Image: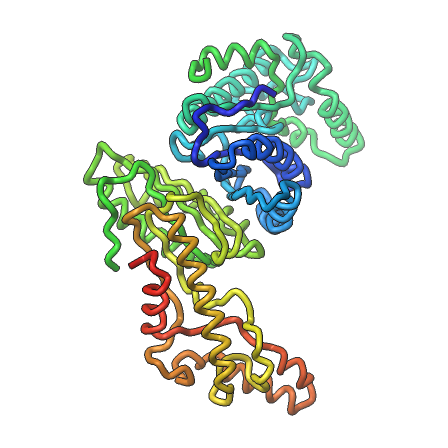
Length: 241
Length: 241
């Protein structure tokens, strides 16, 4: 976690969490990074920063639960910091896909995307041949693998382009996503949840409880990139190199 | 509506709607002011502004409904503006009382509070003598009137202090609230909804369907100021004079 902040210290520290969901993890994660940050900020008593946080998820996410837990979160933060230190922390919600522009230009100092970027923006076109599978599987033809990768590349490039416009010069970004360890796209590492699900669905077809066509038309909009693929796309896109 | 914007034109136009609720009016109002604004912005094709909107309400408000209507709102805005003009409009949600700090320092160019400021932060202390009433009424003793006014003044001063820190120099603010026309606190103008409600509740007590104590302990946290009171408090607080 090399996330030291750019100097000189910004007037408003703008933090941005992407694909937050509404579970208890949203705040525990944010709270951890806040505490770390505040500890540093305490050493500069004359420049107590304002901490402006954007939490982002799709418009269908349950933002109400997040917002209703905010008063307790602020209370907890104040208690944790102690010494009458007011963190001056503002949490806002932003509804929209991170594959579109979401934030004002040159406004973000720190971006954290937590287990969101393996979700691609749509099931790729041209994967009619993926019958019996719900994702890239050992029986998927190479055209399907290619279609999934291309969709991922397009989406990830879009993500990087938009964030690069939104971030300040010298800002930092941490992207956490589910990927595979090596270049073997058929490797088991990233299918360990989806393959049993596909098997269960096939079983339902055999039992006559699910139409085969429905299974064939169902594919999950996920891609698990390898480290080399991520590196390749980041370098090719160019904004963060 | 004298709401011309400060010159030189800001890079990001920050708009802030306070106490928005989640009904269909939220966006119709915002859309109207957006269109007006965009029309002007179109005349300066080289400085297309970014339009950053904070919508605020209490944490218990239904933000989900607002956020779910955003994609259609953006679509509508694009259609209304035409000519491939991208409004570059970002709508965010901020949950919290506007009697606390809500926004980053010196960030807001335009603040609009729509029918929220007559809601005070709490039922004032010291109004045990307001028996049989649920608000300032013709039978309320002067101490009750005073307690209500003092709570209003305290809250409104707090509101002005916080907003003055959050607004840029030269920013504009439109505050819409339910008030009374003159200095007669007992005038009917602002009780026309609450007096029938109080009468109905008293009727329930007479009918034995509601305990008298419950009615006596129930008071509504509203104050309807006169124009002179608003003017007095704004001038006394001093940030906006």
